[in-house]
Length: 290
Image: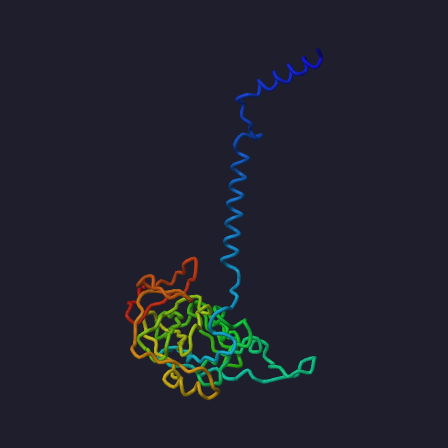
């Protein structure tokens, strides 16, 4: 009879629980918090994947030998002109602890990017630190200790020590800005983009490009560097890949961020968006001062 009584008690307890819902302590707050935490964690994972460093794949690759024309252009109270080319090849050598002959300049040793005092960027990457999507204008500038921000252009003492700060530097009484004009091919003078921020992340993604880093009033035209017309000739001095000259000049309108191809808008703004902040215009676009 004891067994029957126990069975009855179990049956009664089971019947009492029918239709009742299991609730977390504290009501619905706990599962809501768990849901929010999961969403945040997934977002962080996605952000980490998107912002992780590039693997340096793609052109230029190890073994490539590219050339690009460059120049620094600045105005003063009477005119505007190009500054002297950067000096030094960075190719001096030393002997390391193991008795090996190596380049003294660590940056050049790791990148293989330099100039010959000729107004040309000689881009022949030695390691993956300077290949593919890591091939940027900042690699060259950093090798020569050039400071370039949205508002400052500064040269080290070894390169003359000149400093330009747009917060105080005037051009014939006018406010100035720093812009970098980029031609995808030195021979196609109508196909260019003007960048107004994030200069060091401007891509070097093909052979035969041209760059003018300018300190000028807003709206002032920017010429190609003096080395541009002579780029094929200067490039042959130390060998290198053949530079392709387009058979017909094209044009690119609108704005574009570093490392991208598709234009976005015809207005230029000095306020940077959240991603890929550099802004550019083509020769056909009208620069907005708003």
